[in-house]
Image 1 (spheres, rainbow, N blue to C red):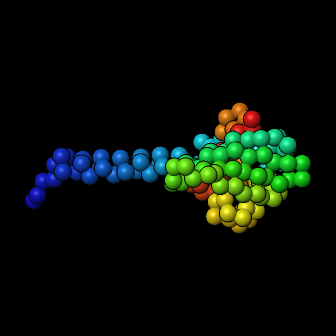
Image 2 (cartoon, helix red, strand yellow; image 1 turned 90 degrees about the vertical axis):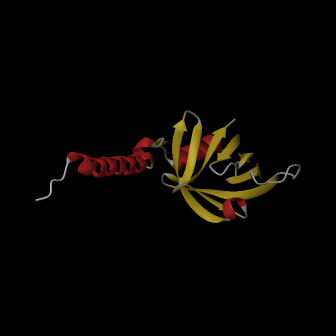
Image 3 (spheres, rainbow, N blue to C red; image 1 turned 90 degrees about the horizontal axis):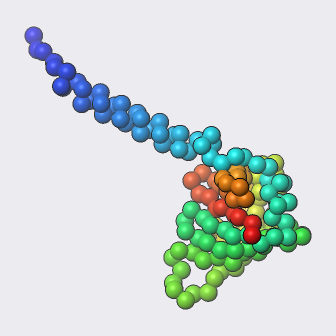
Length: 141
């Protein structure tokens, strides 16, 4: 009869517990509960209407923009991979509201195209438009 000591079982159990804890923390970190407070897209659109804003994205893209009275956003931005001395890039987007989302139709920013993004207020006056792990924060000036 073979005897299995605790030392043989414990490292496996400890590894399992640590792996489970890591997975739970990863799930919690992406949970909406830990994200900012969800806000209505229309409220944020009204706050941005006619104002300048600063933009900062998860990929390191930074810039500034403005939303005019007709719902057109204009942005000037710099990607982190842009060569030194290269001028900022510019783009325009039509802004629409769909419930808690803001929808933007870009020509080239973020790969171009039309997309809708849930909006959350991360801190007072700092709004996050996100889709999955990608996001951009917008802060009115």
